[in-house]
Image (cartoon, rainbow, N blue to C red; front, side, top):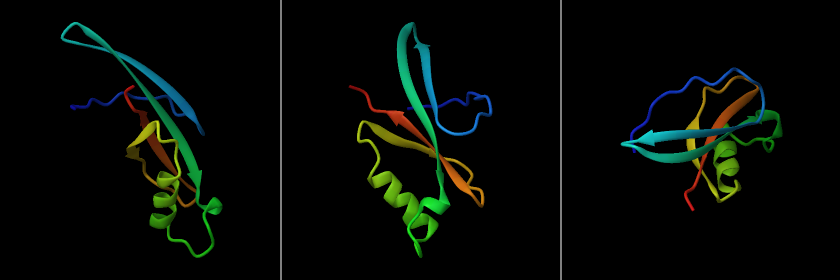
Length: 85
């Protein structure tokens, strides 16, 4: 699947994004979810990579990982794409 970048307004926290696209005249709909996960919520002595791995393994199976954003000292934003039915 190809991709294009669509600017999203800078809002903090959870975001639900619905995108309608028309490719060669055919309408397709795609849903995205952006969530912010805070490092303070990770288990003690757990590396950030281990924390992200745990977040992804326990996430809603109807959604797949799409993008891991630039982490800060406080959190990491992760974008999920809803799986097709």
